[in-house]
Image (cartoon, rainbow, N blue to C red; front, side, top):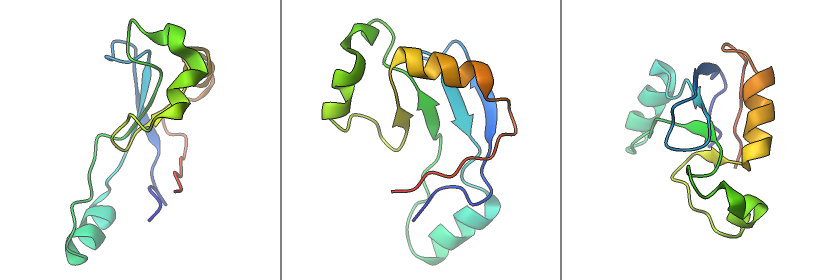
Length: 96
């Protein structure tokens, strides 16, 4: 299942527990209906974010372990650039 045929970045969070965060507008009513019809929880609170505050020094090493629960994590410099250039309303599709 991919997240977000109609998902967008719907908010920027500069005070996240992670180094900056972009919130993804998932699940939509249609996403939730499909999930419930299939007998599973659609999840939610999907974010694109940096490393947990205070340990950004680990950089790309974070990629060695799948440490998020459905979110997309990136290094602090990567999220800083994305956070700066991506406005709310930008479409996003997350594929497995």
